[in-house]
Image (cartoon, rainbow, N blue to C red; front, top):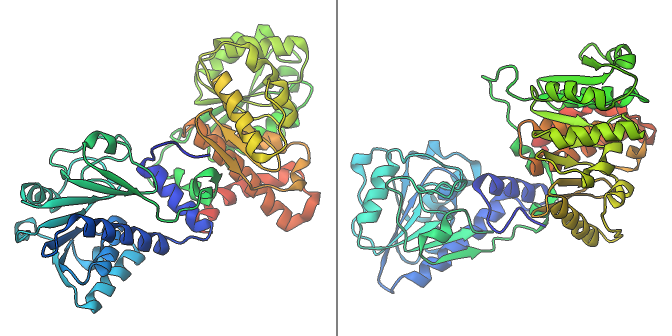
Length: 484
């Protein structure tokens, strides 16, 4: 249960943070990475070779600073590109300070005109890591050119400086290594380098990838220069026999950060739905329930939104299910499908990107096979997700999230959340997240955030919670949890 056979820089940041949440701190991972670099350097060098480590001021450089301690007995020099006070993390700075006390030769270079290599035999390129993209800037550009011109064996740490670890592309003037030691999993673009790539196990637990944890909150951002609409507009299509469900889903989408949320519901209940909160914008359609006559109107509304949440409170009369079929057949955007319309998803050919949020019974009615063991259930969810070409978020004591290629588990939540309405909260939260994220991370975070909101509610109220108790706790679960 993983992200995939390769892992991007952004995904790796999530995995590192999840490892910390699981009790494996970054300092421990850096120590393991430094040991792996040291072992590889020893394999590459001849007995009298001189080694030059060229380190940047991020954690990639920090890994190499650890390696210097493992290589202390060699003819070694460490060059820091930048000043020590520019080192970006505490653990990397601690490892620089440790070198200063060991007697290992070090120097700092901030001006590209002062950079030289003095003919080393082995060069460790640890200038830029997996979080960097775009053109090389000084002094890295000059250092990379000098490394490429040197008559030396070059080892790049994690990725060659200048490789975009998301796109897998090389910047002009990127370091040209003879060997790469990368960590945990290969990064995009490494396979195309035609040089040996060692994937070092640095002790990241499987659960850091397989389980949605607080590190996944790194997918969220809220820049200071944000403007209205940038974080998505969501349309909730619901209501008819029930009025609270679409209101809960819409309020949850707002609490999860959507900028604008509208509710398309039958005109007979529009005033009731709008009365739940002054924050709700209601767009009624004719009739007492969602039927085929309303589909064109709802489709027109949907085109003006980033995501649609289809299902809360719609009911399961045949005219309503026909309308859901017709809507999905014509819709080509992103939709979260919940509750009664889930049953029509296997019947419909659609160009829409669907996130389906069934509980176990709904999952089996969609065609999923029954399984009690969590691992077996994860396999069953992956099979159906691949067959239907959707992202599935199957609710349970342990939620399973899969798009057929990537499968993850969520362990937040508690037995108090069996109360009615929490599924509507989940649908709304996931709809908001899907407005700015791809379906798989949106579904995983939707499960995590909703479960954490439920856990916070139980901490305050015990198991007598109601679904509205989750609303005010959704922002806390999304943002305060990043500091946990």
